[in-house]
Image (cartoon, rainbow over all chains, first blue to last red; front, side, top):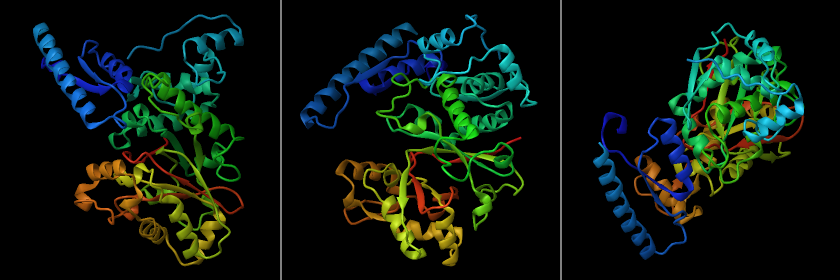
Length: 71
Length: 345
């Protein structure tokens, strides 16, 4: 998508952040925006997960806005 | 495709291994330095052009050219005659249904298992008998190791970087064997998968581990019940996704099953039926994972839903291998992967 000029974004947890950046770089999209959420979710309470989701939604908006400004 | 890079190093084994260690170009064991002379010698094992791209390997999307495969084969200690096996194996792992992206980047310990069939097993002295999954065979050890080095050095699957395995497993160093076709009472794996009997093939499997199943049973029905109960374990990707479990059946066990009048298809059908497990055996989270993957099969999965280990009996695969003894191996698989077989040319 990013190579087609569309604003693209990936979401991953902290455990996969390194992988996400490395794969984006390997595919020639070093600056691909990645929204990162804390890992793991298993022991978190529902309210914590909601808060993480809300924060992630904000991060996504910010990352997409910045990426769009660059295009 | 550009040729592989050449670096200069001291003509000293310790110094070269220090360099490979620092740059994380090894699997943690000393390597055979891939000098130009050794790589040229390795390349004589194939007529393919050195710059031919055999596969593009995730997660780093490196191009596995014949030359790059040869370099890693040298590092692993392979003979030139092994190179065609590795070329075919690279083509196999790159097929979409194998899901090498998932296998290399997952937290699961999945390893790539190479299973060889046909005349090449004898030609290369691939061990298919005593200790065929263990140490001691040059072909088994070095071809399996070369596959790992290729996935790491060309595919970019470095532990802790793009290889996200939580713990991994010993088979990630090397995992390769042949089928003991001479002692199998059934048609060999490659014939079952549509190849000519005299063809040589390599089959790649996304293997999660190995579990020894020692039973002295002499009764086919009882033996299959014991195997099935070993295969049914609640912490299994196969029950979550509908997988592709494998077995390495010992020749003695195979003879008992055959004497019980069972064809390969019969064995698969019975294992599939006997290994069904109530969803309640899984954790709540695993039931949710199964629900996400298998709604098309089961609709709503309830506590009393009997989950099968694979979507259909024919998704259970096995080879006959090993020496005398009562030990059959269950090879649970990654779940989201299907084995691929390629002819070795």
